[in-house]
Structure formats: structure tokens, C-alpha cells
Amino acid sequence: MKIYFAGSIRGGREDQDLYLEIINILKNYGEVLTEHVGDKNLSSYGQTNMTDEEIFIKDTNWIREADMVIAEVSTNSLGVGYEIGFAESLNKRIILLYREQEGKRLSAMLKGNQKLEIITYSKTEELKDIFDLKII
Amino acid sequence: MKIYFAGSIRGGREDQDLYLEIINILKNYGEVLTEHVGDKNLSSYGQTNMTDEEIFIKDTNWIREADMVIAEVSTNSLGVGYEIGFAESLNKRIILLYREQEGKRLSAMLKGNQKLEIITYSKTEELKDIFDLKII
Image (cartoon, rainbow over all chains, first blue to last red; front, side, top):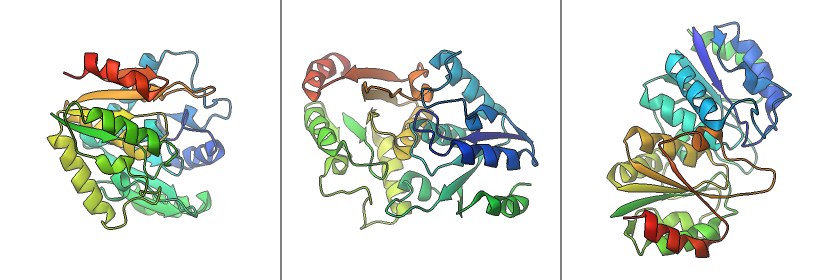
């Protein structure tokens, strides 16, 4: 199974270590196409060895190729939001991972969308058991 | 002409006054379906008189109905990113408005996407002349 993992890059790298942990768990279930999202050397400046158009083409092709999109949506990100909309238009299965935060609410465009599966969690340790049930 | 204006709500309301100014300019060109995005009484908690599913259905129906989507993308927002992906899947014309900011870069998923028209600006005063050329 091919998994497209989506996390914030230019929207902010506050959760980079969390993305890395999630990607490492997801590797038990299939091939993660977007391992670079967890790379601690990748800053919010984004990839510098490719043009924006090259990144766009590569990422949208990976979404086309993926069996499933899993997006961490605790950090606001235009790119992650776009990827979810794009993946939905291709009828991909989409799972969102969200950590509840005081004073913050997940976008109604995601939370109110019945086609998205939303998993609320606190710590990455919880995810293995959830993925065992969800990712088949 | 019907215009869907997209701006950050739960992603953060730092640019609310700017959204209001842009909406007021856009009213010269057509009907703005999403005037509430500029409302100073609308906090990042979002609308409270509707469920998330009701908001999602209303907003996606407005995008279907719109002739054009204009999104302000200087604030990171999952909802705005999603709306752009959704509108693109319906082949809507999409214009992005972006203010260059020190140390920040617009998502490659938007900047590298040839189907989006990106307008870079500094002040809302510049937009009237740009819209006169762009919005027909």
C-alpha cells in the first residue's frame, strides 16, 4: 500500500518531530511516499533543490499514485488544505490526524466534511492501535 | 458575476480588516457571496450559529455557484487551502492575493500550480487597478 503523508512545510515546522514519528509508525503499513515531510533538515523555507512547479508536479503525482492520504492537521497550512481538496477530487481515502488544542478549532471545511475520516489524538503512542483498526 | 472570497477564519483572524477592505473593493465587480469573512465580529472560533457540516455544505455550494474564487493567502489556513483544491476540481477561475513577507514563502502547492493566477501586492490600494485589468 502506498501512503501519501501530508504535513506542514512552509506553513511552519513546529510539528516536524511529530511528523517523523508518525511516518515511522506508518511504515509498518505500507510505503510512505513523502518521507521528506519528517526531515529535520527541511525548514519552513521548503525544498531548495527543486522549483515550486517541480514540487507541485511531484506531489500531485504522488497523490494520484497513493492508495491513501494521511494528513496531520494540527498546524495551519495552505498546502495541506490544498492536498486534501485535491485528493478528495480523486476519490482517495483521506484520514486526518488532529491534536485538540486549547482555544483552537479545526476548520469547518474539514470537520464538517463527511468524506474525511478524522482521528483526534494526544500522543503519537496512541496512533499504532488506532492505525491497526483503521488502516487495512 | 458571483465571487467567492476566501480568507482565514479558524486559521487566524490577523488579516480580518484587510479582508473587509478587499471585499468592499470586490463589490464593484460583482456579488461577494462570503461577506462574513470580513466581519470583525467573527472570531477565529468561527461561526457559532451553524454546525460544521452546515458551514461545509453552504460554503461548497457557494463555490459551485461562483463564477470566480478569489483567495487571500497571506495567512496559513487549512480551510482556504481546501477551498482552492475544491474549486480547482470544479474548473473555477481562481485568483490568489499574496503579500510578500520576510522569511515566509507561499506554499509550493499553490505557487507551483499553473492553474492558479497569483497576484502579489503590498497594500489594498493597489488592488483596484489590478482588478480592473484582471476581473472581466
